Image (cartoon, rainbow, N blue to C red; front, side):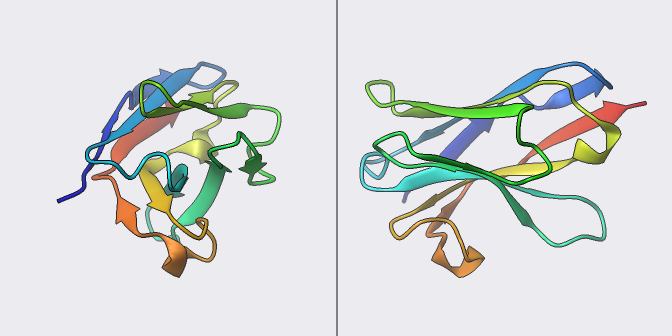
Length: 121
């Protein structure tokens, strides 16, 4: 069974930084678009960033210029560097993988367990 193992969430003050990591088990990494969704309390899950195997990236408007997604293909790991964090970035962040991309959400084939990111004001 494929698993997406996440790490790196936590509590940070506004303006601070965090880096999330996601490593899939099995052999799905190379054939899938990888990325991150997030879900705040009472809100729908939203796509934050994605990256193809070739390195093409996509970002939600709310995080452009502050977040950066990268993937290390030899290490089978995708990272989300989050800088200049704001309280509104507080959410559970989910690693996601999809053969046909990550949007719409029904394209996601695999989900991580989620990691909490809390930004205090």
